[in-house]
Each structure stands twice: as C-alpha cells, then as structure tokens.
Amino acid sequence: MRYAQKLICLLLLVLSASFGVGGCYLLYSDFAVQLARTNAANAAAHAQTCTLLQTEIIDLQRRGADTGDETVAALLQAQDTTAALWRGETQLCSTLTAPCYTPLQDGTMRTVRSGDTVTALYGSDLQGNLHLVSAFDLTGLYRDRDASLRRFLGLEAVVLAAGALVMAVLARQVTRPLRVLTTTSAEIAGGDYGRRTALHTGDEIEQVSRSFDKMADAVQEKIADLEADVQKREDFMGAFTHELKTPMTSIIGYADMLRSLQTDPEEQREAAAAIYHEGRRLESLSQKLLALLALGGEELEFTPVDLADLWPRLRAACPVARVQTPGGHWVVHGDADLLLDLLCNLVQNAAKAGAPDAPIAVHCRDNGAAVTLEVEDHGCGIPQAEIDRVTEPFYMVDKSRARKQGGSGLGLALCKRIAAAHGSDLVIESAPGRGTTVRVTLQKGGTV
Image 1 (cartoon, rainbow, N blue to C red):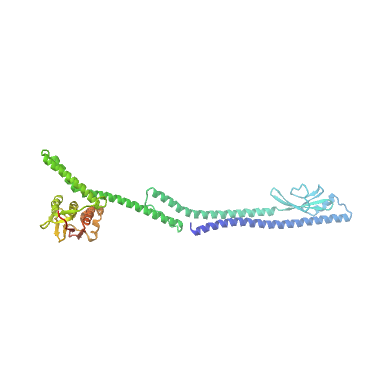
Image 2 (tube, rainbow, N blue to C red):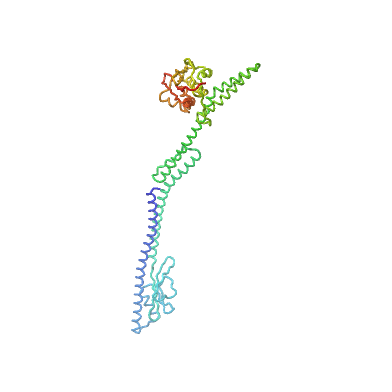
C-alpha cells in the first residue's frame, strides 16, 4: 500500500474518532454550562420567593393579623410562582405540574422527569414549621440538548460513511492487485506459463509483481530449454541412427544374400561370417561415435592405418565418390572405421548439396610429414556466415537449409570431432555458387 494511502486511512480513522469524542465532549460541556447557569438562576429565584414569603408572614405577625394556613397559602398564590407549601406533613397549596408528594429537605434540589417534561425542584424550610418547594421547567434545555445530539450523531454518521467509502476505495485498490496475483499464480500453476501480472501500482505490490513476473519468465525459459533439450535428443537419435545406416545396409545385404544361397554351404558360411563381421564393426563404430560425443565410457585407441585400404571401402559405401590419389601408400595414426565414416559423411553431404550427377572428388595429397584429405563438390555452396554453424551438433533442425548447403548437422559435427580426435581441424572453404571444399590433415606415423 502506498505511503500516502496509509497516511490517508490513518488520518481518517483519527479524525473520525477525534470528531466523535471531541464533539460529544463539547456538546455535553456546553450543556453542563447551560444547566449550571440555569440551576443557579433557578436557585436564586427560589431563594427570592422564600424571602418574599417569609417577609410577608413576619409583617402579618407584627400587625397581629391572621397567619393561618389559608392566609399563608393566599400569600404564596399571590406571588404567581410554581410552588408548593407544606406545614409539617400537610400540604397547604400547590401549583406544581411535577409530582411532589413529600416536602424536600432544606436546601436540596431534585430533577423530576414526567413523560417529556423535565422539572427542577428546590426545597427550603421557613419559620412556623413551613416548607416551600419551587419548581422550574427544564424541558426546553433538555430538548435543545437532544436536538443538538441528534444533529451531531447524524453528522458523525456522514463522516464515518465518507471515511468508510474512502477506505473501501483504497482497500479495493490494494486488494485488486492481490486478486490479480492470486488468479495469475493459479493459471500458471494450471499450465498457462505465458501469463503475467504486469501490475503498475507504484508501491510494494508492484515490486512483488515484478519479482513474480521474473520468476514466471525463468520458469517459462526453463520449460522452453527442457522442450528444446527433448527436441535435440530426438534429432540426435535420428542423426545418430543415420550415421549407422551404411553398416546396417551392408548387414541387410549380406542377410538377403544368405537367404538366396540355398545350395552352397561354403558360401552360406562366408555370408554368415560377413554378417558377423559387419555386426561387430557396427558395434565398434557405435562405441567410437558415442565416445566422440562424450556419451560413452570407453576411450578411443588409435593404431596405424594404411589409407590405401580405405579407398575400396569408400567406393563401396559411396559409389558417387571419385577417389584421386597419386601412387604410393601412406600410413597415418588413427582409426580406420572413424576415418571411413568421416569420408562417407563428407561425400554424402557433398552429394546433398550438388546436382544428382555432379562429380564429387576425393583428393589425397602428400605434404611431407602429413597427408591431406579433401572432398570437393560443385554444389550451391555455403555462405561465409553459415560455415561455422553447419558444424554445430544440431544444425540439422532446419533440414531444408541443411540439405541445400550440404550440412546434415550431426554428420559434419562428427566429422569435426573425428578430425579433432586425429589432431586436425576441419577446414571448410565455400562460397555461394562455387561449391564447397572440406579439408582434413592427418599426420603420418607407424607401420602397418
């Protein structure tokens, strides 16, 4: 809640309480002052009535006139005042409107309510066992007090209603963002990860909203990463299966041949041995590919490889390749299966990039202490900005672009790793419309 809103609510509460308490205090203070003044004036009037009546009775006694009950009652009635006169316990006369059945003690005052009438009674003792009670009407004073109290309570109700309305509006402004946060959190928990609060209240709620949205962004990003990882795993499995397609094709071919050989046991044994050999080679190649991808627990062990032994296997696996080598044999330190897979991948990628009948040349050049292998096509070429990307492991996600530019994603990525395992870089030279040349340099070493 904003600081200003908090301050306004607090001020409203303080003002409402102060107005109520202060108003009641002032109202009753003013009434008490008026009542005290009225009581003082009434007491003075009562004392004056007592003095006049006592004086007239003394004057009659000096003249020897009759001071009986009727005479004294006539004297009181002649003063035109609201009062009652007793001699002892006997009431001589009374003009009181309020009930007064017994004389009051000397110097006492009593307030009597009768219906809507309020009367103040004052009692005093006189000579001759007389007792005078005077009455004064206070109904108007109390009526004014009650009217003022009703007006004040009505005004207090208006103030409280206005304060409640203002606080309700402020509370609504506070609770609405909380409802948005609650609803949005429930929707995100239900799977709608694109929901956001986007509150702009300018207070602590906005800070909570920003933190909540950041958390939702992180969750959505994490889910997107998990989905991307799943897609990458699916792409990897497809590409990895493609890498093993050629050995599997050989095994299937040998199996078909074995089924067609019904008579010659020797040829059947040779076909079965070939299937067994290809199966073992497929297992070995799988382990080596997994090791290159850092997914297997085994380490690669290289031995001297005579490149002349690779050319017949390359022509058999990739008939479109035209191997061009000068005379001689070169022995390099490496792995025959991985080198064959490297060349097959390069040739197959080159075949994808070029026309169906376009020549794909495989060159082998002697560089003294090293041998350079090159695969050259005459396809559409790869833009310079894309050359580094086509060797990324999952570039094959955009398959149409990969086919046009000769990149099968995992294929070229494996080529790069195979080259790196043999201590060489995979050098790609290409330009749109000029074809692509891929070069790998292998160090000579060892004897076969």
